[in-house]
Amino acid sequence: MKLLNRLTFTLIANLLITASFAQEAAPTTGQVLDKIVAKVDNYILLESDVQKAYLEALSQNQQGQTSPTKCQVFESLMINKLMVAKAEVDSVIVTDAEVMLQTEQRFAMVLQQFGGDENTLVEAYGKTADQLKAEIEDVIKEQLIVQRMRTQITEGLTVSPNDVREFFNSIPTDSLPLFTSEATVGQIVIKPEVNPETKQALYEQMVQFKKDIAEGKADFADLARRYSEDPGSAANGGNLGFSSRGQMVPEYEGAALSLRQGEISDPVESDYGFHIIQLLEKKDNTYNTRHILMSPKATAADIEKSERYLDSLKTEIEAGRMDFAKAAKDYSDDRTTSDAGGFFTDPSNNSNRLSLRTLEDPLLFFMIDTMQVGQITKPMQFDDPREGKKVRILYYKAKYPAHRANMNDDYEKLKAATLRKKEEELLSKWFVTAKEDIFIDLDPAYDRCNALAEK
Image (cartoon, rainbow, N blue to C red; front, side, top):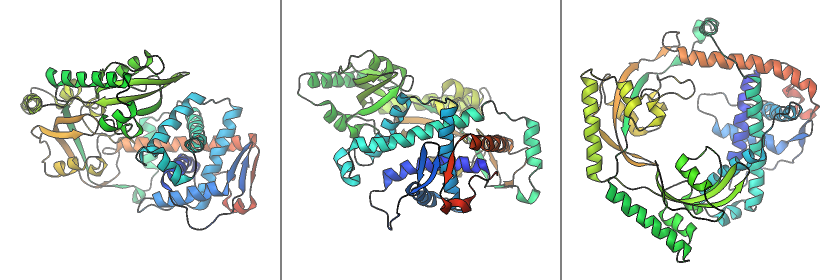
């Protein structure tokens, strides 16, 4: 197995260790007598680590793909330890604040699966919240170090059109991948502007929440669980855990950092709605807050106004007086697509040619299936899980039939594959050198894997 594939799997395997921690509410069948199977400098790899990652990898394997072998999993986890050990030698640093921030976020995700109830979580695993956080923290730290080492090793790596051409020509014709039918689809989204009266009524309701909390008539966490519209924190009493500077929207961060510990803000408006925020703790460049989020709801008249606006844009585009991509960049409220001219893109290669199955919204899939190429829909309402009711028009720009990979149609995909190949070659050279700098001792039971052999 080539080194890049092993290193790519390395990151996945460690993520799966955490995922299995969050999912394994019941003990696995069978029993593994634990032992150390690899020592990499001061770091150890246990048989239970390999077994857990292997079983999780098998369960996550996609249909049609070759399942990883136990040796491949072992190699990936061992290389993880090698990167962590080499990071110490090369002074690659991950701060405690970074680890703490991601640990809190990951724990919040796990807790959410148990309805925000720590007692239920503790009962499921037989460990305290602090013990569980410590386990997550170890995995998070290793992940961050591996990611930083990989970035450092491949820093500045680029590919030219000639590199892509040479890579494509090196693939035997009968081995070229077959791509399913693809489409280029765009959208222009408008978030209806809520009328001032509705916003003022909600603002006053949240002012009353703050007053009730201050007077002891209400509890912040209870109000968050009952009223907050943030699905990621409501069940946890509004607690967002630690956030780093720049992570939250500016309005939220500015208000949070202006508070004293324990203080609650007046209602603060952001793109998500109104927040009342309580600062729980500041530590280094991070801060721990909880909030109650409520979004003012657009009325039927507000939505109709947005539909008329979008309909006028549609008319201008169809008449040729306005370009769809420019209109999306200038007017769409969806920043994830507007910067790409309104078009959905494949995050793995930034191409706007994608399988319709790549679209996360099933309603989009079925809508596009009924459209003709070149058609723009009439304004349609849809529900954004975080921001409520919105309106959009869809543009079906092009359709591409199933085909073998070629330079004209698939350049961006081939460019991404070329970059991965160059990363593989660079990482292979790094591995040969790095393994000579670090003490490594493998259990004889894994000698058959040839984990230290040059690939």
